[in-house]
Image (cartoon, rainbow, N blue to C red; front, side, top):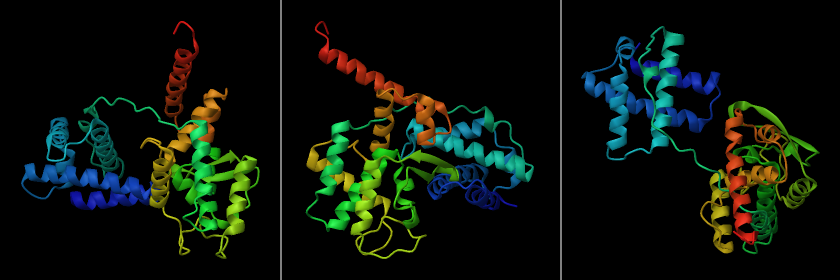
Length: 304
């Protein structure tokens, strides 16, 4: 088996056994292909499994340095993701193909400064939904669709992929909703009356007869509504409302978490609602809320 064969087997493993998203499989595959191309250039020929077992920590560091200083230099976060893909690949070689390599695990990635979520305010979230619902440039059912989609993102904290994966059989919404999240993990999230009403208003206007298993959200010609259209929707709305570029569909999910935390919800509950595997991911929102408290203090305290 060659290195290329091993790469193909690993990508199959990611897609069908680990059930990684297509985007993850594509990103990991691209990162490891570049890694193998780099090793092949230094090796002077096709790589065998034995060659992969002999890769040293210095070889991996040389590859990371090459990606950091190459024609398209990677950021520390992208370098860290590339190293994660390499480790996953070598872990597969060890477990499945009997090709261990302890040296790769010794390589430390670059220090990555954790990014803070950038939510919109409650008034901005409300304004985005109202602006979408009143869009005179669209058919009434399209405006109702956009308002329902944004209301789901903000009212239930869904990822855009999770909202667009809802089926016709999911509507009308009940008091709770089963959501298929990352890694095919299922979670249950409460549904506010306003969210259920927005989705019901969209379904009432929908001009297409859908089968129960068809996607609920539809494009103008009747096909499934693509995620890029949601990005374009937010770009159009934030331009009208004068909001920053950080006002994306995912910002509404950040707002869901931040506003819950500010209202007194505990981190464990927010973790469950968001479907985070690690509490550390959810803890990022404490920094956002603390920043909001300090800003309010600076505005309101007479001695600030």
